[in-house]
Image 1 (cartoon, helix red, strand yellow):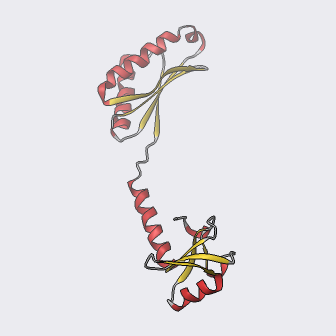
Image 2 (image 1 turned 90 degrees about the horizontal axis):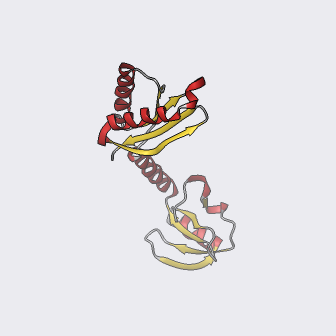
Image 3 (image 1 turned 180 degrees about the vertical axis):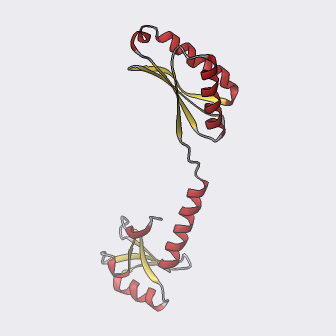
Amino acid sequence: MKRIGKELSINEEIRAREVRVVSDTNEQLGVMTLHEAIRLSEEKGLDLVEVAPNGKPPVCRIMNYGKYRYEQQKRDKEAKKKQKVFQLKEVKLRPNIEDHDFYVKLKNAQRFLADGNKVKVTIMFRGREMTHPELGGEVLERFAKELGDSIVREKPPKLEGRNMTMVVGPKA
């Protein structure tokens, strides 16, 4: 029934000859000509709004269109507030990373996860490092183990070109 904004036809914008009319109190008024329906809505000081244009005949409702639009925008704004927006943060490592550097990157990832973001852990291979992708896999496994049970592996480690990536997210 509800579509947003400019898509709804009102009053003279309606192109059907006959329409099924629903009153402002949700009462079925039946099928009538468009001119009759518009006259009826104007008597009540309201608008005739086409809510189901695909019906045979199209369904129109007598309502205060300005108030309807306002309520709809309010509902949309409220739904947007409740929506959880997360970002995908990235932590880049090397297959032969030193312990201190590893823990610095781990701490960053923990901070990102605590903020509710997902983390893409990337192992970058250079030159001859490509001959031992298992080293990168071990680093990713160690990284996931260090993060503990507070994470969910959304994508397992996967080699893509010269990089091996894994995506982890916070547990719900």
